[in-house]
Length: 294
Image (tube, rainbow, N blue to C red; front, side, top):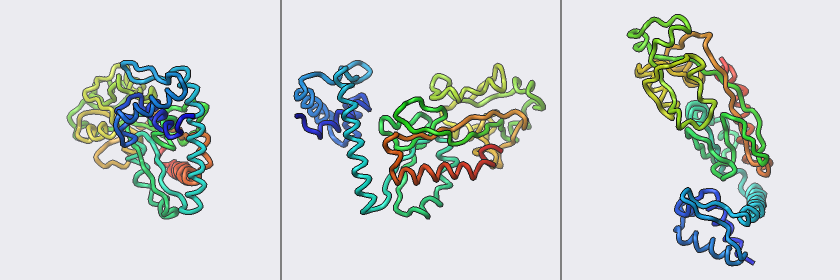
């Protein structure tokens, strides 16, 4: 029988796809990771990975082992949960979220959670990309699109509105903007198209057929800053921009609506600390509908 400890290295290499990345996440060397993989392959008498230019991919035998390894990991996590909650309630939990919602909405509204649960520790991973629950990057993740994985528990978190904003300085030096037809005469701020992590972010053409984009960024916060500095018109979530005194809302009837979805792994949904954070975020969004959907 193989050493169960080898499964940690197997799972991390499968999730990261590269020896160096797996080693960094496990706080060890790539040689150590390789040694554990070799040991488990020797014990099972079959190769578990095939190495390609893009990284390591599972063989059919590796796919079979993955199901059992994840099941064993889940049992260990739930056992740890049961024990730690009886001796030291709550603990650490990681929430992955798009940067706009994470930085400009959630981060400033978490005080009530910690007042209620002082034993809780939250890691907020707020980045302009998809944060994977299945790869253990987070225990709860908030997405722009509904995940399709069967292993996840998912619900709609909230709808939210986006509108057009620009600085007064930009408007003062630009052509008059009285209707949708005038938008084609203006400079725009938008995303880097080939680096979009969600099709839900392709919305400039909803306002203007051929927008003249002068500034691109993968970050919605950078786009807001560019609009504040007078570079052009930006499409921004109302919860970010409506309270910004340096931005002027444009064409109030020209808005679009998008949704956020919240997910976690099915087997973790009964975790106490997970449910505490999950319920708080859901209730927070319910209370703030006036800001999210003005």
